[in-house]
Amino acid sequence: MLTTVVGSYPAIPQKPKSLYSKISNVLGSYDQYIPAIEIAVEDQVNAGIDIISDGQVRGNMIEIFAENIIGMDVQKGISRIIGKIKPSNHSLYASDLKFALKKAQNISTDYKNPNKTASKLFKKNVFNTNFKGIKGIITGPTTLVLSCRIEGFYNINKKEEIIMDMAAVLKKEANELQNAGAAMIQIDEPFLSTNIVNINTAKKALKIIIEDLNIPISIHVCGEIGEILNDLLKFPVQIIDCEFAGNPSNISSFEQEYNSSKKIGFGCINTKNKNIENIDQISALIKKGVNIIGEENMIIDPDCGMRMFSRDTALLKLKTMKEAVEWL
Ligand SMILES: [Zn+2]
Image 1 (cartoon, rainbow, N blue to C red):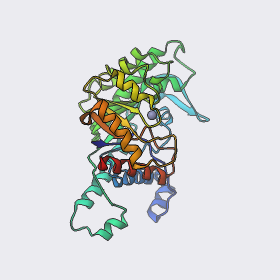
Image 2: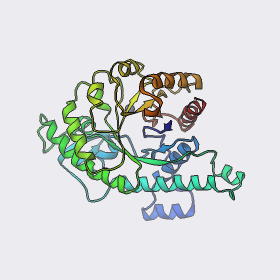
Image 3: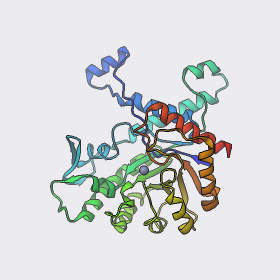
Image 4: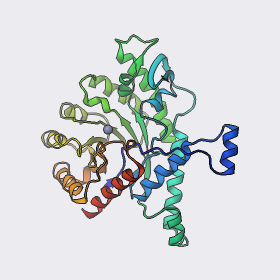
């Protein structure tokens, strides 16, 4: 079974330390998040994860888009829509994805190179790798619009119009991430499980984003999905990613509704609780999933992003998850 992450990893931005980075800092070209991406990639690769992310270290899933899309901003921590939403002429996160991909490829090559001695790898913190690719991650248009304060241009009661404009912007970004080397695209729509969402609008918007992509598409939905699972299973995506560790009722929902060949991202690590699961616990949950979904349709991952954890907790949770999969 393939393993992956949902996306975010504890962000550890670093002040410039070396002479070179201090000079770049003076020149205004130092990027404190580059070391944070390196840490996220190194940890995911070392935990043995197959499909990694760049760690989404630059901020929360709403801000990182609101800060960079024309017609949006973030003021005093509040993400807002203040004008007509339009694509900018540069990609938002393709260069982070490229950087993370290169880093992961380098670690894998080092690991597979017989000339690299164990001590060299140890110094570089490389213990393991199953790295196969990196996913591009996009916060879905429905979630983005419903998370923002709408303060200009749009009629607040015509959410569909705003969501479609947002979808057009995100489509461009999804294409850029594909061109940058993403092995798949994941669209995060945590809001779909709340009853404030129009599921048909969400589906229409999703179709706009993915129409030109030719890599696998996943949709991640947080929380209890019982009410919308039937609709979700009809979304034009290859993978539906849900939380099963923190939301046991999702198991019974799948028991009742799942009868397709869609792949399921099977969240089996609780991302709301910092206690580390034990291997028995995780493998028992995965076994339940196998009985309902079938091993061939399962991709194993944590429930949700791991941004709120310490680095140690996040790494240990990932390693334990991987061990449980290997043990099975
Ligand atoms: Zn989630």
